[in-house]
Image 1 (cartoon, helix red, strand yellow):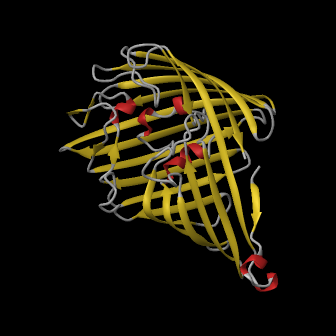
Image 2 (tube, rainbow, N blue to C red):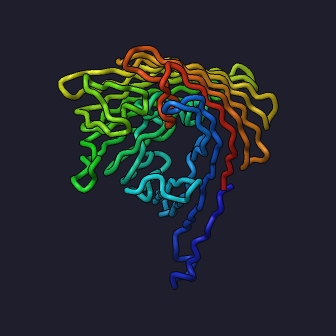
Amino acid sequence: MKAKLAVAATLLGVSAGAMAQSSVTLFGALDEALVYANNAGGGATVQMLDSYHWNTMWGLEGTEDLGGGLKANFYLANYFNLSNGQNFNSGSFFYGGAWVGLSKQEYGSVTLGRHYDYSVYLLSNMPGVNATLAQTPGNLDHTGGGYLNNAITYTSPTFGGVTFSGLYAFPGGTSDPFATGRAFSLSLTYRGSSFRAAAVATKINGAYVTPTLAGMNMFLGQDVIPYVKVHVDSQNIYGIAASYDLTSKFTLQASYTDVAFAGFNQYQSVRTATASAVYSFAPDLKLTGAYQHSGLGSGDMNSYSLFLDYFLSKRTDVYTAVHYAQSGGATQSATLFTLAPSTTSHQVAVAAGIRHFF
């Protein structure tokens, strides 16, 4: 449930009748899991993992009715680690987004600020294993979220279930050591009663990526240092996804992404195909199974996930999951996203956690 904070006109010293109607909403989510891995960096580990099933965060969003159907809107989101209370990213307080804009139902909306690129639509519009350890290798395709500063976005009205979105991001500036160059992102989504689909294309010039999060020991022909970002000339992301409700209890989903990197006079592609099925035993109990294959240029990786989610209420659920990754290739390690790579070609993880929305 979101808590709404009324904007009182009397506090501003003006009459309520002379003021446009406004609202501000405080929202957030808390998510923490306990994870066992059989081999993470050479040995078995047990650890707490923040934001396993959902980003732990709080935020503010608001709107002001300007009259004639025109509205002013804003959004601010802070991601943080529940295990220690620290910000998720020390260099960005509102890491999860910060923008302001205008909207009108018949024309769409325009925003300015920090925004995710639209690759995330491939995941957010589809049911599946929404868990950190089930993320595509290294999140190189940004289906788990990728943010761009200095962005201007446009989202069209929805016609017959179809919505178009476009984003342009200006170069990041010299104050950010990991600032990207100019970027573009486009998406086309469809939402029907039982069928959903999305297609995205994103191009980021001067991007920074972390190959070891995908288990890569070599990238673009270069040896990589564990967890050190690599600057590439360009990162091009293309993806499609679709889901279909076979019944009110059973849903099938599939997606495919192709990420092309250029740098060091080399080219490398990362291609990932995912298939999943979701079955609801009851309104409060859901089981999801997923298979994922990634061709990483330096090798390949197959991963399997089972995720059981039980809702204690509309705002609180508990969950448990099992994940398995298997790698192939001399320069490719098995790794589930955010865990240290296995020293073998296999990695297994078991997780249990809780999520609460407010």
